[in-house]
Image 1 (cartoon, rainbow, N blue to C red):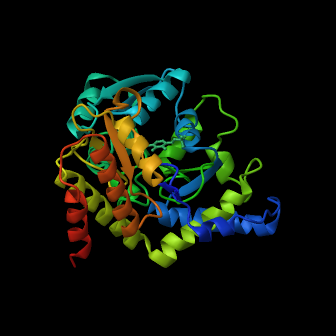
Image 2 (cartoon, rainbow, N blue to C red; image 1 turned 90 degrees about the vertical axis):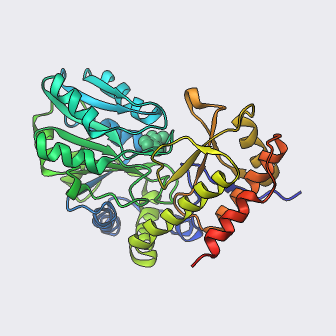
Length: 378
Ligand SMILES: *Cc1c(COP(=O)(O)O)cnc(C)c1O
């Protein structure tokens, strides 16, 4: 039987053929031609990030930029708040510890979101908090934290605290406004909404963040934000082909689809997925779902690993299991990046087949019917 492959995971995401073809020829990186590529990428990234701040590019997966946001701004012994409501939030704590930074975690139950007042309480009871580190979208639970409200609270009451947001599955998906929300450092990566292979990370820095960078004394060498921004080149050999792909994908998002439309499309697809899984009697894990992916609680007595496996084996549709403690308990369907309505119709159809085969009681077509209603409405 023919089994085509469809990638519906929250990273990596599908790569459009026009992005693939843009990455076929290698040019040398110490040339004016490549400097032009870097220049346009940095310029377009500012538009994509919706910021007036500069954006540095690293050849690394997203975690490299997360690490840089600590190693370039803090000093040994500094204290930060890390919002930990899933695997990626917990990563903040691990990076902090490895650099000798004291992190005060705000533990958030998986699927729940951080409240501004909880962060405020920690800041007021701990003295000398230097930074607040959070995810916009916590990919392990599919949750969108209220990074706008938190940012505005910090801007008004604690303007000397650095506000760092991992926007890896939020930038280019939802309307994230770093300058209005007082986000000093915003991070993204290539293999999510940017429709590229893994290997590039991005980090924007406000003037306040650059002041923090001046006083920072933590060791770092490869991940040097100010060093990258100070040159027309990259400091080291970059992933040249990915830069070529980045230029093409940014042109597509900004000038062909248009960022407003990109964000609107993600909103529609996310809404459609949430409604169709609910129509099958399933429950979402998140109390405040992100538009990049949907985390669904596996029906009672059905291991989600089974659902993931059947979807892949029968239909070639790769979705994601839960991570860590959530493994076997939830499954995650991504609708981020180069995804359209037919992709979603296929994914929900494949999910129905997998649920039926796993022994879940519902009538086939319940989810798909709701989906088609949404897509044919208006
Ligand atoms: C994917 C992702 C990262 C980065 O992970 P890498 O494997 O280093 O690319 C960081 N934060 C979030 C929220 C993510 O979804």
